[in-house]
Amino acid sequence: MAMPVLISAETVEKLLQYGELVPRLEVALGKFSSGKGEIVQPVRSVLAIEKYNGYLGVMPAYSAHDDVLATKIVAFYQRDQPSSIPAHQASVLLFDPEHGTLKAVMDGTVITEKRTAAVSAIATKFLKPVQADVLCILGSGVQAVSHYEIFTEMFSFKEVRVWGRTKENVDRFAQTVRGPVRVCSSVKEAVLGADVIVTVTMATEPVLFAEWVKPGAHINAVGACRPDWRELDDTLMKSAVLYVDTREGAMKESGDVILSGAEIFAELGEVVNGDKPALHEKTTVFKSLGMGIQDAVAAKLVFDSWNAQQ
Ligand SMILES: NC(=O)C1=CN([C@@H]2O[C@H](COP(=O)(O)OP(=O)(O)OC[C@H]3O[C@@H](n4cnc5c(N)ncnc54)[C@H](O)[C@@H]3O)[C@@H](O)[C@H]2O)C=CC1
Ligand SMILES: O=C([O-])C1=[NH+]CCC1
Image: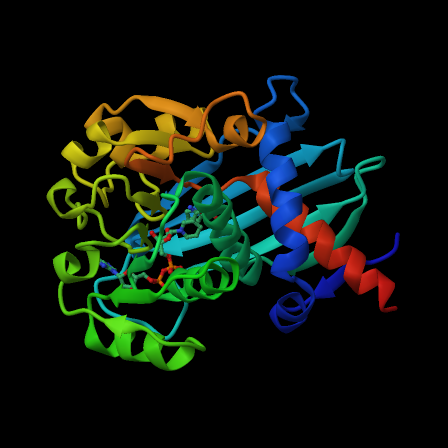
């Protein structure tokens, strides 16, 4: 049996380009929500690694349209202190869908960084107010950087603000990103007047409160992926129009959705398909949890580009 190829994080970083990734993710989101069962993707299975405050998630997905069968395995850790080891580490196993042969094992950490930010950008394209001048990023880690990259590439914000819990992280963020950013010393300062907000923290209690949010703003709520973790307060969750990546996942994994009792208006894929409206004149929340099919589509792109270079 041929050995699977190993594709490193550096290679994934080089081969995975937003320009190719975004349209493919948009199609996959639409197919997932078409109601025709075009994508097979069970809700992520997660086990707790209690001793180390961590979790291991397994995320299989199959798409006949993309002819892709893959599983991401992602470990993530809730830490009180900053660490030089990334909070999320992932690998993607890519199979030949016809026979189940393992074709590639590739880094999934960069895939997770990029595909998550790309999906938030797709949600923002549909749901942001027509005039969107100010972007606010809450959190200053890995996802904050990838969101900064794609949001400044796809949209024309006049100002980008960031808030982070520790000065060390925020300074690192400001030095890493290629472009201007206003560092804010409180969440309130960062959020007031912002048209688009991205929450990419490891918070387990709300950090974003409705009273600070400009009416009509769009929020991408990316953190808080456990049923008892929160980033947004109840008032915001219940007063905004709520979009999710998957209904099933949100009802099982999102503390913001489950504990607030907020009603889900639509899946993002239903908006892509034109089956549900993008109410961009209202305050909107896109609750992102991450989907195996996003990783599978990204992994296929990487593998095909890698193959083309051999
Ligand atoms: N929806 C999705 O598809 C995905 C969601 N995520 C989530 O996005 C979030 C950010 O992930 P990364 O950037 O990779 O993590 P990271 O560890 O690189 O950054 C986390 C940031 O949150 C801050 N933070 C930690 N605890 C906090 C607290 N209690 N209150 C406020 N801020 C706090 C840290 O200082 C840091 O700035 C996490 O919640 C992660 O689980 C990550 C990958 C995919
Ligand atoms: O989709 C993903 O990879 C994750 N979502 C939350 C933690 C990791």
